[in-house]
Length: 71
Image 1 (tube, rainbow, N blue to C red):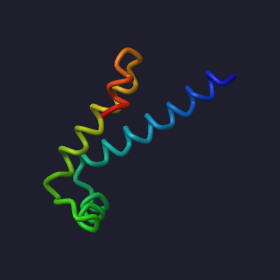
Image 2 (tube, helix red, strand yellow):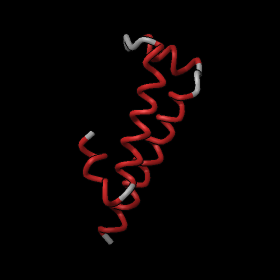
Image 3 (cartoon, rainbow, N blue to C red):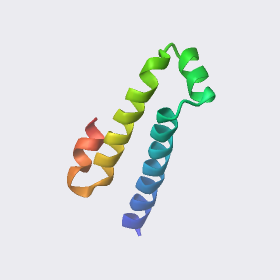
């Protein structure tokens, strides 16, 4: 039972992080405005999206999940 709860929570985290990284790759107004409000330059949105997606993929693959969790 506990194993399945952990898998479900991990799946939700992975889905959220994939959505977040994907939104940063596409130049959306919401991402640009929010980044500017947080003091992050618009030019850093795509690199942050790529880094987020790479870390999420590392976390999703069982053999590399420790690397993804550390990043």
